[in-house]
Length: 277
Image (cartoon, rainbow, N blue to C red):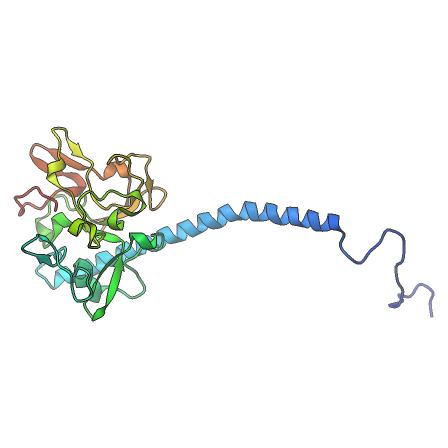
């Protein structure tokens, strides 16, 4: 046998060598692992936010499709905001103790792979509405319908490409969102509705009292341009013509000019009242 042939029984017992990792090696690997984790985590979170934002946008599209299907079967009109108690003018609770709303009405037209809940929303922001298929189940929702378009004829809406019909909402003022006029004094879920009260209108051209939009930590009723939103750049909103856009805090004001509401919260000509709720 050749003297230089490999011997599997041979052991390298040269000084300073070990088949085990030293403490120094472990520390180096730990430092490398921590460094990689610190570098990768922000990228992961950014990708997660983009994914949640995309899913939310798809939810809004599915809501638009369901609204249109509902309108096709109801004389080209949007559903009522909710079933109201005529004595109080507020939503009346259904069998499960929650309001029967526009979400309940369009749910039969809503695709199963979409959701009425934004994946970014916290549990506290989710309102519950009646499920028309069950007296024991409810439907969670974090998207509100503009109350001024309740039962409105779509063809009677001026500037439909500018008027907002759906936007992201937060229940009961959760996450510091503005809810100055909660239904039932805060005893009933209200994130299904977007509204405002014209008693807040000032002699100037705008009021900031738009309720339940998912803008966080609204300070002294001021929707600041740099304010926090459910998604970094804003909240998903939908116009009457189906255009999806990200609404920023400063775009959420009610604009009151020459005795008329204009912009995102304008009212159909058929409604004489300027009240949004």
